[in-house]
Amino acid sequence: MALVHYPVYNKNRAVIASALTTVDLHDLARLSATYGLSGFYVVSPVKDQMKVAEEMIEHWVRGWGATYNRNRSEALSLIRLADDIGAARADVLSRTGDEPLLIGTSAAEGPDRTAFGEMKPYLRGSRPVLLLLGTAWGLSEKTLADCDIILEPVLGRTPYNHLSVRSAAGIILDRLLEGSQATMEGKKWTP
Amino acid sequence: MALVHYPVYNKNRAVIASALTTVDLHDLARLSATYGLSGFYVVSPVKDQMKVAEEMIEHWVRGWGATYNRNRSEALSLIRLADDIGAARADVLSRTGDEPLLIGTSAAEGPDRTAFGEMKPYLRGSRPVLLLLGTAWGLSEKTLADCDIILEPVLGRTPYNHLSVRSAAGIILDRLLEGSQATMEGKKWTP
Image 1 (spheres, one colour):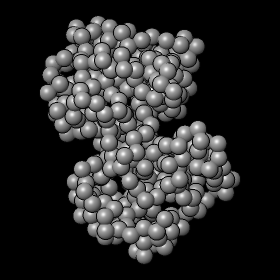
Image 2 (cartoon, chains in turn purple, blue; image 1 turned 180 degrees about the horizontal axis):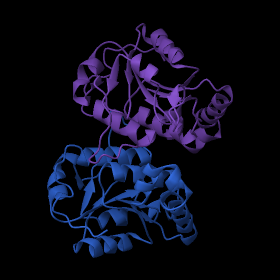
Image 3 (tube, rainbow over the protein chains, first blue to last red; image 1 turned 90 degrees about the vertical axis):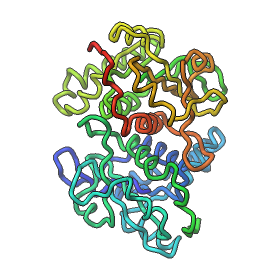
Image 4 (cartoon, rainbow over the protein chains, first blue to last red; image 1 turned 60 degrees about the vertical axis):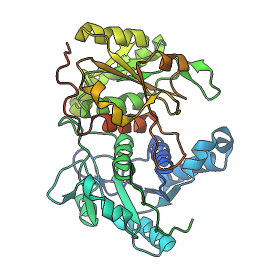
């Protein structure tokens, strides 16, 4: 999974680099550990913000935080920092020997969306999968167009369609992986 | 749904009142709007913290925030503050004319847990439902014992069992309500 801070839209649909939110890193790392992901990429080109992420991870994985809360250390050790989506893709390639299947997510509906129920063959295939989640007002159209698959939006029971990435990530991973038998089986990964 | 800040456990399994976390209120209010809940109770006996919650809600629902982001206003208007779980129950009773069915949640497994797949009859019944989510290290045993039903924990694909309440709430609502046809139908609610 990758949490993308650039290129994403702001409220006025301009493409921006969004601010790092440390609670997102905690929550999505905990989800990654829960659902057995091999890694969780935090993608941002803003070096100052990546330094904050590095210090936070250092604190929880190797610093005092690791003693205080070992579960947090286990989850946050899955985080890898990447300057852009290409770097995350390249890292998956280097660890698995395969180009990952890029899965985009968006709160917007569109004609080219793939339903959750149709995802099993891709998740069970031998190719590694990289699920992209956008921060702020979502992944840019160009980023979505570069994906192999765009997932249908998470819809609840109302037209309200504004979940936090922390809640949406949980729902998406649960829908994709709950009850699924073979996501990581047959997929290589070099830690 | 109710987010409970007391009585919950801390890391050392002492019963405490946990600190209000504003991002929890935003995320769970957005989930409540997405899944069509009638209301979202924030339960805490700490008056200073409830004042913070009140000011935050005021800002987003009626203040400047309502103009800045109408979606946030829509979601946060579902929040009701309650001193304790009893006050939340009484509020549901006064709005619906029925005592709510209390559903407890816990990350811990136990012999008396009800599976997600067995929940439909309760959700489709005419009785209102109040789903309790604990903050910190979870709802106290006594609180769970007072519930009519205790949901099974959200398990992913690993033994790791430490989700944030923001992610867990999303997964729980999605598992309970996705595809369900009649949750609110037949249930009275006086706004």
